[in-house]
Image (cartoon, rainbow, N blue to C red; front, side):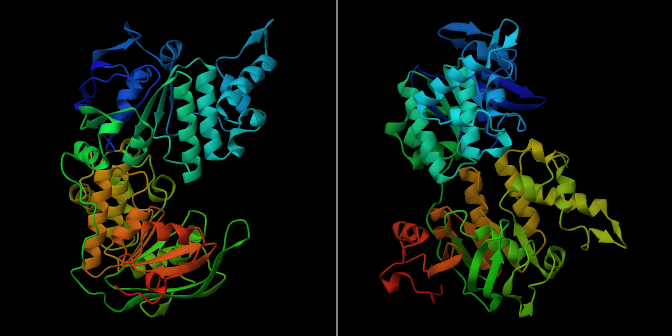
Length: 510
């Protein structure tokens, strides 16, 4: 790709970008959310037509007006949000639009044989699900179906857009093995990501985009996370744990013997006890699925506990609704910004109102004061550097990092006493991660009590004053982040207690 420029009105998403993919290699394309990565690859895949520049395949200039043109040239794209028809079966999705025909009828048998061959060659194990509807498959299997679909259609170049964003750690490992197998078989892959460690792990070369420009291309073997981070954001990133400047205050949240049942009728929180003080960040670490989501839902009023007590400011709030807890001063940054944090088709003005509908100054005499609501949204956009800086923009039009910054700004804007943040930087680029971390630490120093749930060990250690590790619904231990290593945290997350009590003192205080 030479000199690719793509504009949307006055916004320049790609500005004269050069990008080269060598045959049989994996080339990572990294950058912050909104840097132009997906736009550039959408041009390559025929979803957008460039305003300037040329695409060459095997040295020949090509024009891709549609994805069909790109596919005919051997280019396939696996989108971050899968392009599958959920009620249809795996077989129907793979052959959709490319059905083999024999004597006027769809030749399913030959399609099954070809899919089985592709599946066996790369260890996809997709052929055993051919008659299963997509909606019945887990995310990792759906992603493999997407890859098989592209290979079935003859793709030699595969674009993977943020492919690990929705996967578990085990599924990520499996995807990396698949990518290595594809490379060994002669395929050429473009890996779009903002996760530096993954790019360094799998790629041969790495190109960095910043603000629509190609900052540079480096060999993965000759660079580091720190260098890539500086290329991405244009400055040095602060990754060390910052020392406290204030002391915690009185206990604000007190939880005793909390037990919670999950959606499948199983106990997911099994008698948890803890407290959180003013001016303290209490971290909850653990492998996803060990009861963290149900714990947070019980604290925020989204799921009733079976037994136990949740006290907030000395008051029993165990039976309070979510609305009542918002009004009492409990804010919540949800785990999934798309399904729980935003209405994607709403503009930022309306999204800024969510959770505030009954609160002053947004509601007066039963009527919404839209001027106050707009002022609030514009303040969030300005103070949290939401891009583009337009309160009338639809939430769906923002990058993931900017969506998350808006959600964080809205919840902080409630002026809460307690903030519960579930995976606050999931799917967010390194610059936005640093910004959100700085906001949480600043609020802690101002006296806010904060509960942070995260599966990122580096994040939980950087932010927390105490870390509780959750395993099979229990707090297996509470540790001092200054005294515990990532390896020891990993052991606790796997259910192994530490033998050195000095490293895991359940009474640790900052």
